[in-house]
Image (tube, rainbow, N blue to C red; front, side, top):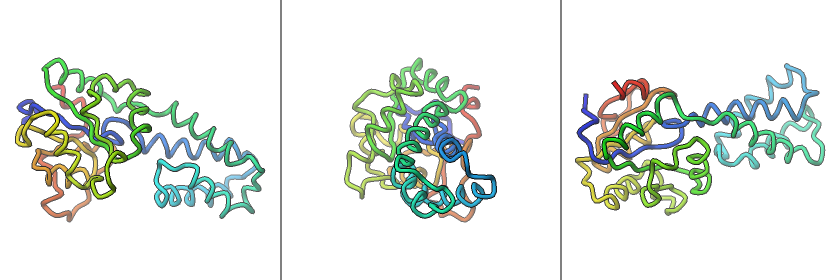
Length: 233
């Protein structure tokens, strides 16, 4: 077990580490389909929703226009879409997603504690830069990360997206804090691999996902936590 209090630089993943992104978009997708296609009965929804989940994985959660369009095309016989169905789906989805997105319990309290202790904090996240910054604003986290210490993969070549260690190394370089004095918090094997390759300590937050068994040592975290509240004790 590592002592997180000894680190000077605390680097955080965003989605499903600090905020409940997966839950928000999954619930928002289902609510959008139910709202726009009210005529579809339960048995129809039981066929559509697994398709939607699969399509979301293929296109990526950040591309609702693409996976909703594919759903409408592939399930037109059940959905009976009108000419503006896609736009209605997108509007309903975005409204629901915005209303559902929030920080995990005590995440903000932990950031506030680090801030009060004078620690340096950075964000390293895969995704679209504008989208990720808007998420930070929406949940009230934007003030905890200086602009120059927010690293989002959309600003870099695809080869530098996590699990590449590039952005984590950049966080160390820009903050002028060596890797041995830094720790990275993430929620999956890609995060842990990126942190370990960068030479920083790694903490796996498993409030939303768990690491699978049988992973190589290089992708294992230095330690795991069950909740952000445990970091306040």
